Image (cartoon, rainbow, N blue to C red; front, side, top):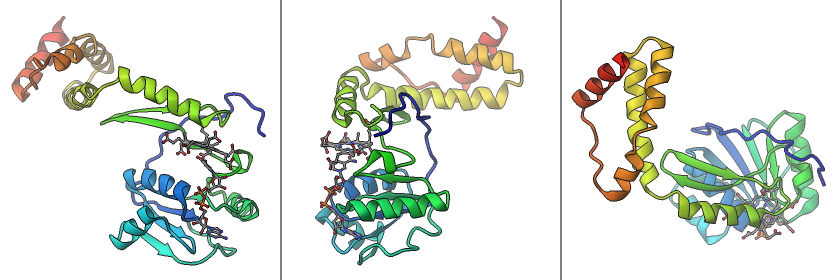
Amino acid sequence: MRNAVAGYIPIFLDCEDQPCLVIGGGMIAERKTQALLEAKATVTVISPELTEGLFKLYETNHIVWERRVFADGDTHGYWIVYATTDQEMVNRRIAEEAKMQGIPVNVASHIEASTFLNPAVLRRGRLTIAVSTEGAAPVVATNICKLLNEEYGDEYEIYLDFLHRMRSEIKKSVNSPKQRHKLLRKLTEYPFLEEIRQGIFKEWNETQIHLWIVKNEED
Ligand SMILES: C[C@@]1(CC(=O)O)c2cc3[nH]c(cc4nc(cc5[nH]c(cc(n2)[C@H]1CCC(=O)O)[C@@](C)(CC(=O)O)[C@@H]5CCC(=O)O)C(CC(=O)O)=C4CCC(=O)O)c(CCC(=O)O)c3CC(=O)O
Ligand SMILES: NC(=O)C1=CN([C@@H]2O[C@H](COP(=O)(O)OP(=O)(O)OC[C@H]3O[C@@H](n4cnc5c(N)ncnc54)[C@H](O)[C@@H]3O)[C@@H](O)[C@H]2O)C=CC1
């Protein structure tokens, strides 16, 4: 068992169109595959069998399925690898092979063989909250997400879409970094979240956005 505490760096990877390999076709493979597809990755699954869910994804062309057991060399050319078979030795072999090539690898059965791990995740549109216990208790990570689920409701999706739009406009039309920082900080002080919760928030149109920028630049 890895003893380090806080020895991981949390990062958000852009997986769009990246070739990702999942080895094994059970429930854990299905869970990791779903997460990869949500991130628009290109997924290949190598396994003699698939769960019903994975088989549906195969039938609908969402994944490529190679119907066989893992063979040496399979990880070559992939961007990221998940070893999710129920065979400890196979998972370890996959991890060794991936590591030799510098490919990040997650081993579902043995944290110490992995180079990265999957946190429990809560999503609200552009908001992602990811929680890890460094493998000490994955269920606790999930429970923390359940608690946060109460605190961070759907209003965050509308809120962040709006802030994203404002930020893009500010980046386009305000040249000075100092001014931009001032405006972006000011924006988060408005009670938009409260307005969204109360159902009284009205999306600003282009003119309103520009008027706000001009007015607050001067302040
Ligand atoms: C290290 C890590 C590597 C990784 O998989 O990335 C890992 C490893 C292992 N998990 C094991 C068991 C379980 N894992 C879950 C659930 C989840 N596990 C997840 C992540 C992680 N699990 C990574 C660290 C996360 C962290 O930092 O806390 C979640 C959060 C995200 C996800 O899977 O994407 C997901 C929540 C899904 C959701 O929210 O829906 C459940 C409960 C369930 O399935 O319902 C059980 C059974 C109960 C138990 O054993 O605790 C075993 C023992 C296997 C065995 O004994 O054979 C190992 C291997 C080991 O410990 O070495
Ligand atoms: N990280 C996590 O969140 C969790 C991890 N686990 C671990 O994950 C592993 C997998 O769990 P499940 O999906 O529930 O198991 P499972 O038994 O449902 O699925 C295993 C899959 O691996 C395939 N397989 C077996 N040998 C193979 C080989 N040589 N090449 C390719 N595919 C092969 C099987 O056909 C099957 O599809 C277990 O070993 C367990 O220890 C279990 C629970 C949670």
